[in-house]
Image (cartoon, rainbow, N blue to C red; front, side):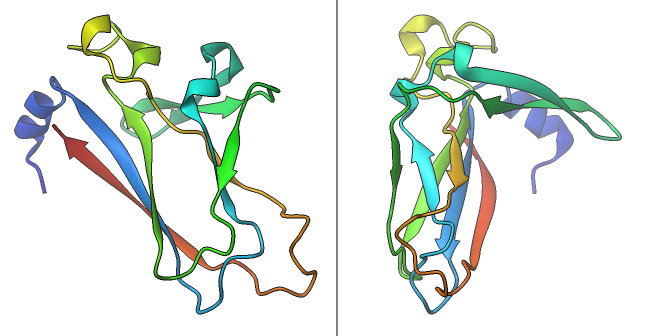
Amino acid sequence: LIAPEESSELMKGRWAMVNLWRNISEHPVQDMPLAMCDSSTISNDDLITFEVRYTDRTGENYFAKHSDAHRWNYFPQATRDEAILLKVWDSHGAAFSGQTADPSPAHAVPATFSLHSAFVDPTAAADCPKRESIEVRTVVFY
């Protein structure tokens, strides 16, 4: 674990939240697979910001409005042997360039975050096994 005084210093540089998603069932995912939106197709105007209130702080998160410009991808029939990494936040993301401690537009990376969601796959059999998966969030300091 990182000491509070060390975390403040680390947050001044580039950091990201990366989730690892994985099927934990012996069956490939058919029911409610995970989909990811290509970040280059997301506009800040597509986002609805909402507050998340904790006892010690207030954060924010996003809902996305539908847009025909969004391009969604998924891994059909994902198995236990496969894992998906999702960069769910990057402090040097282009969408928030200049709003954090360091990134100037010249140092911004293209994707600030990734929209992702489960969805009803119309090709899945009605009696297919229910999805069993796990998602773990990590914080990466560069």
